[in-house]
Amino acid sequence: MVRTIARLVVAGATLLAMAVPVEAFPTKPVSVVIAWPAGGATDLMMRAVQDAFAKAIGQQVIVKNVVGAAGTIGAGEVAAATADGHTILVSPIGPMVIQPQRMKLTYDLGSFDPVCKMVDSPVVLMSPPNSRFKTIAEVVAQAKADGGRLAYGSTGPGTIPHMSMIAFAKEAGVQLKHVPFRGSADVVQAMLSGTIELFTDQPNLVPQYNLTPIAVFAEQRIPTYKDTPTARESGLNLSFSIWNAMFAPKGTPAEAMAKLEAACRAALADSGVVDALDKQKQPIDFRDRAGLKAFAEAEYAKARVLIEEAGLKTNP
Image 1 (tube, rainbow, N blue to C red):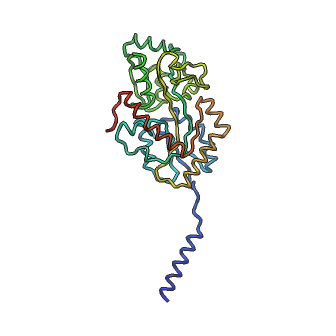
Image 2 (spheres, rainbow, N blue to C red; image 1 turned 30 degrees about the vertical axis):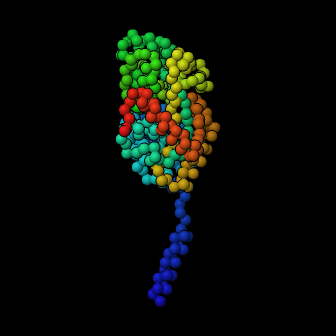
Image 3 (cartoon, rainbow, N blue to C red; image 1 turned 60 degrees about the vertical axis):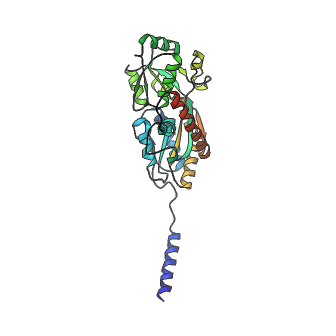
């Protein structure tokens, strides 16, 4: 009798558990970590996508800026977050495939599940509004005259803005002064205050802050900057791009991953987002989970070459 009652209790509990619906993802606001200051290039891009992504995912989306160490603090926070889909990272190339090969971190590319690729664009060499520089030739001439005192800003050692300017100086045969900052918003403020005069980064900073585009580091002119020459037109063999993609902590459930990917796809197809990113001069380049995984792995391998060409130290 006791055994029979015990079996009935277990069976009843099982049926009760089956009767209680499991809440479908998302069950609370989704936090999107941006590893750079507000007003920077990646932050501006995500702010343009935020409302459409929230509508598509069916929950409030909160953008959280976690700043420091060339984007690795924010990336590390997401890598260590609960893998339930409610905390995700939107990041450019540096923290994902460059910095893990330069220093010992708490994470690597394998610490994340790829969600979607969002945008991709060649970097633009820019200067302050009403800059004295309008061409690469003018920059090179001034750099030679200054003997290494002409300063450029970057978003930190080992980032694309840093490595692209190392390559620029090498190709042009000049010396430049490197001034690192926490993020692109800080670099822009330094440009506006006259502290530095040069910066390479994502193109959306130019219209946002009325900066002066000097050249595009690409093999050919791009539609969003059709009147801006490439560095190659000035005889410099330079080609660099910065992409932004969405990642979740490793082990995020498949249901959550599928919904995040679908929301990303829908948001980037939204007419308001398309218009906003067009005004930012940020080309949309959506790739799904599988596409981003293959792309990021290929970029990881290419980054090693970039690091070595820039003369930066790498992990053993």
